[in-house]
Length: 487
Image 1 (cartoon, rainbow, N blue to C red):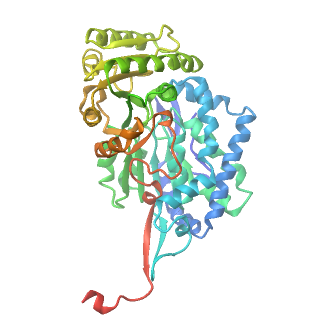
Image 2: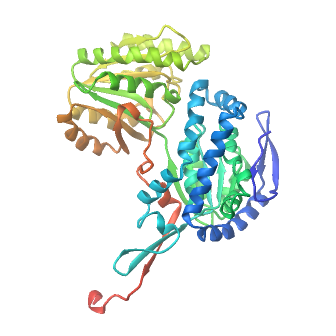
Image 3: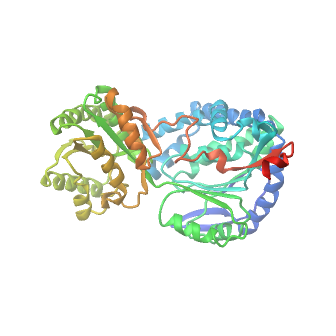
C-alpha cells in the first residue's frame, strides 16, 4: 500500500485502485487543510536562520547514509529497480549519491548563485546598491510533480523548495515513490533535534496521485498553490497547464523537460578518456536522463569516426558488463531489427553479443539514419533506445550545429523539446569557435563528454535557477529618488 508521508499530524486521505495496486492519496479536504496551515508555516520558516534550515538537510543526508550502510533500504532498491528497469548496481550508485544532494554547503552554493543578493537574502534585506535592498520570500505553497526515471532529480527541487521556506507537496511517480519517501522519512527522527527540524518536517507532504485522480484535478484547478513545478512531457504537460489555467490562485507554473543530450567530438579530441566517458554516459540510467547522450556527432573524416567508435566499443563492453540488465524478448527483437535497418541504410553497426549488455554503436556518414528505423519500428523511439548511439560523421562545426538544431524535428526524437546537454570534446584551437556556434542551438549545458550526467551546485536547471522560481523578491528603497532624477 502506498500511503502519504506527512509528519505534521493526521491528514485525511482516500483509497484508490491504481491498476490493481492500492494507493492512499491526500483527499481534497485534507489538501485544503494542509495548504491553509502551510501558509502559516511559511511565515515561521522565514524567521528561521538559513544556517538552521541547511543543518536539517545535512542531518537528513546523514540519516540516509546510516540507513544505507545498515542495509535498511534493500526493499526500496528492489522496488526502484523493478519500476525503472535499471541494473541493481546502478540503483546502488544512485542511493550512494543521495547524501551529495542533501549537502548543506552544496545547497548554499546553489542559493548564492541563484538569488540576487545571495543566499543571505532569504533571511533579511540585503543591500544590492546604494540605498536599494532585496529580500527573497517563499512563493508557495509549492506542488512538485516529479518524473520517475530517477530519485535525485526529484530530491533537488523538493529540497530547494523546502530550504527557501515553502510548504511543499511532492507527487513522485509510482515507480520511485517508495525510494523518495524513504529519503524524506528521515525527517521523523530529526523532529526532536531542533525547532528547525520540527518545522521543516511539518512543511512537507509526499503523496501519490494517479494521472486521472479527481484529487489531482482539484489540486491543480482550485487549490491555493503559489508554485507548480512539473517534470515530464506530453500529454501530462498540456493537461496540467489546462487545469492550472482555471485556478483562481494563478500559481506560477514551470516545466522541466522533455530534453536530451548529444555528444560532439572532434578529431584529436577523441582520446581514450573521452571514449570511456561517452560509454559511461550511455550506460548510466540507460540513457533516460535529460543529459544522456542519445546521439553522437563526430567532426572529422568517417575513418576517424570509425576509429573513435572502436575505442568506445571496448569501454561499452567493460562497463556494461558491470551493469548487467535483463531486457525483454520484445526489446531485443526491436534492437536487432534496428541494427539490420541501419546496416541496410549504409551505417556501420557495432554491437554486443551479450543480451545482458545489449549495446549498439552505429556509425553513419553525413546524416542520421535513425528516422528510417523508427518508421519501421515506432517503439525504437528515444525512450525505447537503451545502450544505443548513432555516431554521425560530419565535416565541420557548422554541420554539427545544424545536426543539433535538427534533432527535435526528427521522428526518432518525437516528444523531445530540444537538446539540453552537449558533451563537448574538440581540439583546444577549435573550442572557442565550437562554443560560439553551439551556444546558438538553444542547449542549456555545454560540459565535458566524460561527465554529462554530473551537475555543479551552481548550475541553473534548464536555463533557470530553481531557487528564483520558488521565491519572489521584495524590493526596498531606503531613500526617495531625487525629483530631478525623474522630472
